[in-house]
Image 1 (cartoon, helix red, strand yellow):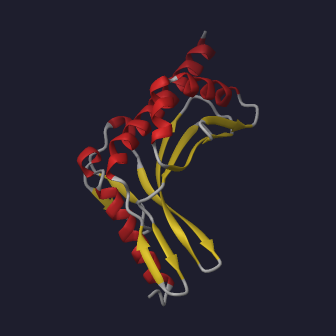
Image 2 (cartoon, rainbow, N blue to C red):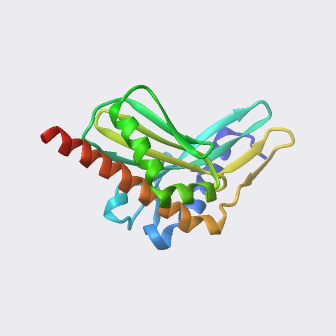
Length: 190
């Protein structure tokens, strides 16, 4: 079915656009760029710049394309750290002060910590670098799976019951990261 890389990428672009359109009621019309990334026309100001991107994972006889919901915002700190959510907890690498305090703030947020286990996640990471925080949420579903032999591909449906929860989690994460950034900035002033 896939005789060329181009056909596989076209199918992946169609899958990510189809998934992004599920959020249109909340985030506005989904518009796809030439590179396959999807931008939303009606985002609330807190989620300005949210983009749906693709991650490819190759395997010997096929692979998958996952959808990432990526949000980058400015923060008042320049450390380099990565926080990951695994096994019900946030963990970070490095000894950065903002990362340590952010992990504490994330764990202290009962609404977030109640919602995350109910979300079907393939991954969740918050990267702090150069005065920016990048939140990348990768849900199960919404992507594309393909096999070379026999040549098959199929879009992996995004569960409709996860849409509202995904939106709430992203908004909550953005708010917590923003508050931690403001706290760090006000502590430096005093």
